[in-house]
Length: 222
Image 1 (cartoon, rainbow, N blue to C red):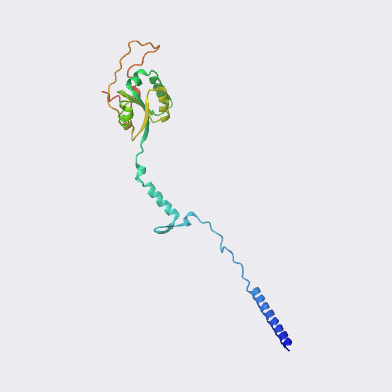
Image 2 (cartoon, rainbow, N blue to C red; image 1 turned 45 degrees about the vertical axis):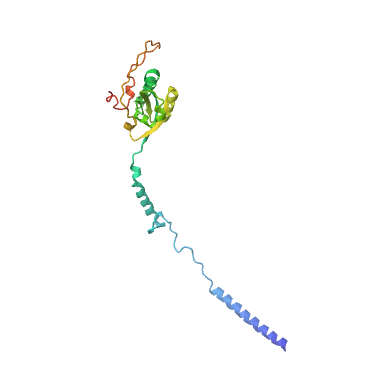
C-alpha cells in the first residue's frame, strides 16, 4: 500500500513539474526581450565647442578657456619690454690697433666694401676709449691707454678677428641701444711717424679709422 501511495505521489509530482516547465517555456517565448539599438539616432561628431571643462567658476567650454588664457598672455607687460642686444669685441691699445697692425685697415676696408656691394647694414665699428670697458676691470688692468675696441654683433667674426690680430683681449656685453653700446670717452690720437719705413708699400695715413667709427663720432671729436 505504501508503494502504491509513493507511485501516486511521484506521478502527481511529475505532472506538476511538466506543467511548470511548459508554463515557463511559454512565458519565455512570449516575453523574449527585443534588442534595443545603441543609438536611437545617427551619432553626431563632437566639436571643440561641445567639449566641456570645469573651472573654479563653474562649467564653461574649453574654447572659452583657451581664449581667456590667450587674452591674459597678450597683455603681459614683460612682452612689451625692449630686449637688449649682445655685442662682442676685441680690444687692445690704440698704438697697436691703429698704427702697428699693418693688415687691420685692409681687413676692415674689405669687409665694409663687401657689405656695400650686398646692401648689407654695417654691424661692426671701431670705438676709441669705449665706456663699456668700465664693466671689465680684469681687462682694463691689462691695457695700455688709450684703448681701441673692434665691436660687432657678429660673435663668430669677432672670434675670427681675435685669431688674426692675436695680441688682443675679447669679451661680450649687452646694451639696450646702439648708442649706449658704442659710447666712448673723447680722446685725441696722435702717433709718431717712423724714422725709417722699410716696407714696400706706404704707411697708412693717420685718420684711416674714421669711416669705421660709430655714427656721429666724427662730429663730436675734440
